[in-house]
Image 1 (cartoon, helix red, strand yellow):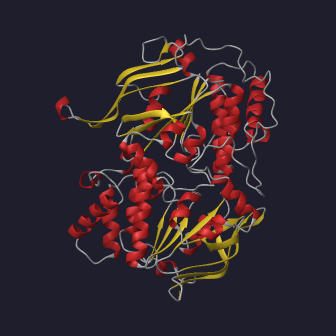
Image 2: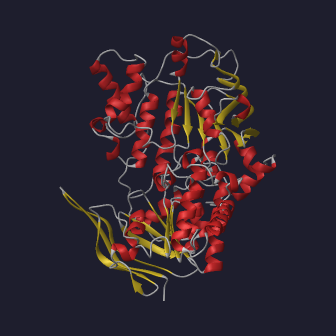
Image 3: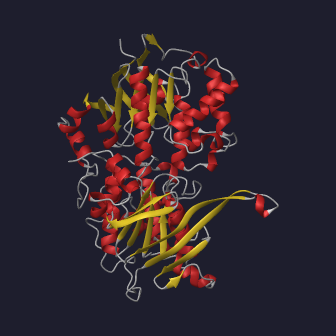
Length: 564
């Protein structure tokens, strides 16, 4: 008997314009001690299956047909009250977005201990010890101290580790892991996946692993199921599906995965996809508004020079200065970025990568050190107008496109805002033309201007962020984990788009990512950060082939191998 059996599942979302079928006639089983991978594009129905199993479908979604069995017991017909004994205790779920999974006004200790006490018959002291041990298992440093903190005091990757600890806290029979390692660097990712595999072996735990990372699937899953538009199109042993896929879609999906063992020029387009391809392949930018005639004089030096950069954050406040506590996010780092190159920054969560980006853009003030951009001192007390002129040439694409877009503004207004603030276009009509042109450029079309952010997929929202970043006609683009939450097909489109834009607009990129295969494909040189220190800088291929620092060697050694 299988641990979990899904029989002919169909999930529907009724609406004013008809009924949308998100999952259609899907049958799948998971055995004890087995990890089944679920892959496919955004919107394929992967997460919907997990939500349907636990009866967590958002209204008006409904399980219209099919059955769900857990160890011979049918659970899709249980009442909401009866499901309380299944959720958490027998089936746990690791959600993709850790911030919405955690209560922002309660400490991590409260949330972990409450969950443990709800499902296990142990004392509060034992529950607290268990919670600290779980945080240690998932790689949280100083767990006895960090457990007293709140979710906002953790980085994105560390919040994900807390959510994983929550899911493991009551020894469930089945875990549904929805993109559990999306925000994690390779070392912590390997640690978490090893922990899940060990639990499968030692506790006969079943796992449904929803992910867009084929490297994770290749190294973790026993079997893999491939989904397309709500249908299960291919299912089999992992190595068989990866090495000899039967379906054209599966073949092209695997081809779109960035190889870890070599560098390629462009990412192939996934077959049968409805989403847009690379916007610039047939887009001539000769004489385009974005192509500037002026060039920076760098005096033969680098476009960006960072020397001795430091950033300190105050953790606790106090009237007396000696009682205040601080954390050093960046410790005296130095690097340079040449005009026209792509410089990568890698490192684990909390290493300071995103902080460096925010200091360069002026979001955070530097605590110490100097930054020079095209012979302008970014840390000097220049006039506001002079600073704004330089700053608009440095733009940033944030990790989470949804939270970086104002949900109450139409896309046209979002993209136009930098143009208005920097007075780059004269009349309203001229501004509308520029916005329409930018949306066409990133492959969304001018009609997107009338819509709101929630009407777009994750990949489309990232394209909107790119259009907004380009609106000031920048020279320097900072990409902070621009594809971390995207499936491989959309990731390939975004990375191809960035390559095209760089080539035609002569952009310089600072590319921040924990995805080492992506870094290998995109970057000319790479800097490796750890605990706020820059431990190694090297040419990309040299770094991957002959890493010098022990931490770099560990990072590359833990990288999921997916050679093609």
